[in-house]
Structure formats: structure tokens, C-alpha cells
Length: 507
Image (cartoon, rainbow, N blue to C red; front, side, top):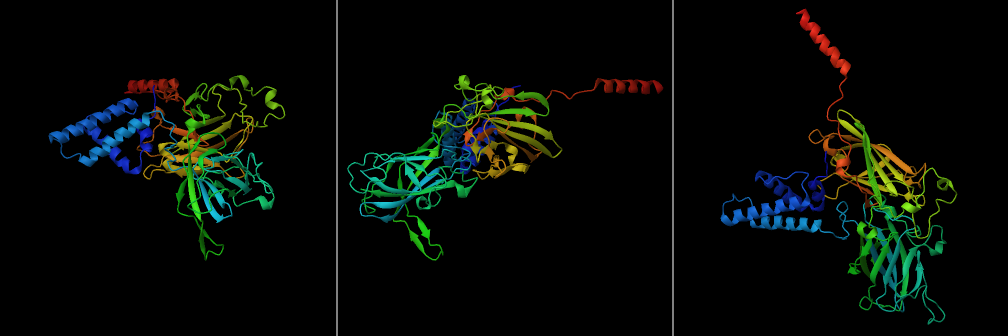
């Protein structure tokens, strides 16, 4: 039996709310005009169908034989949808996440005062992503000065290098490099080096998980720069590591000045000048291979569907550690390397993270799923981890037993995505590979009798993300399948047959 995710489930989240009605209308009209599609249709078949339907509508309009199904503007909208479908299918590294379309990290520079040769700015980084955090060793921010600016001093952060400051006599700048690289300070630094929302080792929570922890900030005093709004030159070529690659930053743009309130909220002040830089994440830029995989099992089938072989690439297969070897239990195995090189447990999939989705129980009005996340990396634990799943029945979550849960509704009419994350101080830390390197929970969902089924893999998720990266699912034809018929007890059947015979003989 061959199973696959419906193309409708894949493409619908890619459209904004104003186009969904048009797309649904297009699908309905295609059915009424005998342009049939199936959930197993390929993207090329779907695109061909839409093109045929658009041409048919166009021909009807031109020959005036239609019954005013389309107007000219509707035709433009549908043609635009077809073009958009084509663009979606093209390979791209665009930093766009259909489950978090507005997610980004915004870097805001507020000039709070002018100095004799420059300015003092408060730099605030806000993680507006719903489920993608920045873990240890934290963020790294870089840029290039437009002129010959230097950094006289910093509060709440520091640059990795000072650079060549030999031309300065007396006061020596904190950094003279044309392209400084900045790091957050560690917790516990002296009070006079701290700034609001600083000193967290660069760790930033996702806004959808912990809004207060999703902000990081520092203060920088810039010299040899402009001393007015007209003479200041904005930095260029911003880069952000969080902590690895994947983020792409746009150019700095001047925006309306930030408004501040005094502590008593009776007076407003504002920054002298403000500019923003927006950075977005692309998993394709972060890694050519997935960083996690998904396995399935169910109560109605003894077969466990494992992660695909080499799901995350097998480049670490020669350096992996067997779970029952002495090396797995030696001291220091959990010490991370400076370059964050993983040390994985030897598995078929060779992924640092595996998510297991188990269909546990089936009730009359409810069904129950068990989720388990296992860490196979001996050198990394995951603080404030997040797990995102997409399934049509997540609109009826009744109870989540040992995780926190929050629905993600990026599109108003569709509630099929939810975020699971650990309870604070209980299981929000996923430990390194080993006996403690897993977290698990169970989810109780209410059935929708019009759509619920165990057939054709419907009860398994469409997409799964761990810490913001999409995980590789098994191939659809490997999903646990329902038995073709119910198990019949031959003794009971024989007893029933004999009873019928004896009854007939007594008549």
C-alpha cells in the first residue's frame, strides 16, 4: 500500500489567508468541471490540472459560453496562484518558513546620545520566531563599518578581537576592526559591565515560548563617526550566527525613533535615531542534511517504522560510538568541542535527534498519541527545546500530559500545527545521549467523526520540526498499515457453526 501526504496539505499553508478562498474555490470548480485530482497526484500533475482549468476558464470567457464563473480579476488571481505554485516547486534557499511566516530576528540600533566624535547606541536583538531559539554557545553578531569608525567601549557585550589600534595615543578603543564580531557576556559579570537583557551567554528563547527571554541587548560607544542624523553612516553587511550558520541579514533601514517611557510612565522620550536590521533563517543554508528524523509505530501493527537509513547523512559514521561500548561510559565524553563537532551514537539514521510518534490507544471519542524525543549526541544537551508537529487533528487537543503545548495559527482559518516544549525546571532540558537523553509525553485528542481514520497513514504527522529544523519522515509506503481484516477466532466460528447445525436438526 502506497501512502503519501496530500499535496493540498503541503501547498495550502504556503498561501496567505486572502488567497485560500480563491484556491479552495479553484479546487471546487475543478471537481465540478471533471478535472479530477487525487491526494496521490504529483505536483506536476496538480500544476498541469490548474493550468488546464485556467485555460478552460479563459476559453469560456473569450467565447462567452461560461455562466460568469470567472470575472477578469478572478482570472488574474487564479493565474497568480498557478505562477506561485510553480515558484514554490523551484529549488530555493529563501529564508521562509510556512509554519512561521513572520518569524525573524530583528536587530534595533537606537542612538541615545551624541558624543564629541560619534554616538552611543543601545543595540537590542529580539527573537520574533515562534519556535526557533538560539542555544549555547549563543549568538555571534558581525557587521562592517561604512567609514573608519571604532568602538570606544561596550557594556553588556564584547568584540572577539581588538584589532590594530596603534595609531591611538592615550585612550585606546575597545575595537578598531573594520568588521567587528560581537559576543554576549557570560552570566555573573561585574555589575558595571552589565546592560539590560544582557549577559546570558548569547542564549535567546523563542518568542512563542518565553517572550521575556527572547531579547538580548548591549550598549556600544562609537567614535570617528557622524555626530548628527545627516552625517551618521549605517553599518553594512550584517551577519548573525545562532550559534551556527543559517541566518541571512538584510540591510539596515532607518525607521521611526523608538519611544521610551520614564519609570513613572508620566513622560515619554525618544531615541535620536533608530535603524533596524532583519535576519531570517533558512534550514538549507544551515546544513545540507536534516538534523533530526521521525519514526512511527502503532497499537494495530507490531512493525516499527524506523527513521530512514542515513537520514541525516552518514559523514559521522566512522566516528560514532556504540551505546554499549566502554567509550560511551568514559569520563569527559560529554565535554563539547570548540567547533561544536558532534559525537553521535551509532545508529542506522545517524541523526543527533530522533522523534518517535506512537499511536497508543483508540477510544470511542478520543485517541491517544505518545511522543518521545531521544538525543543521540554525546556532546550536546538542548536547553528550552521545542517540538512542532503538523496534523489536522491538532485543532482538537484535549490534554497534553507532561509537555507544555501551544497551538500555532499562522493562518487564521487553519489550526493544524502545535508546539510542544518542556515544562520549566522539569523537562525543558534534553540531556546528552545516554539513559537520561530523552523526554516523552502523551497527547489526548478528540475525534472529528467526519475526518478521523486510521487508514492510509492519516493518524501520523504531516511535518515535524525540532528546534526549528524540519525532520525527515519515513517514506509513505513504510507507514504502519491497518490489517486487511479483523482477527477471527476459528474455535468460536466452529462453535457457532455446530450450534446452527444442531438448531436446524431440532426443527
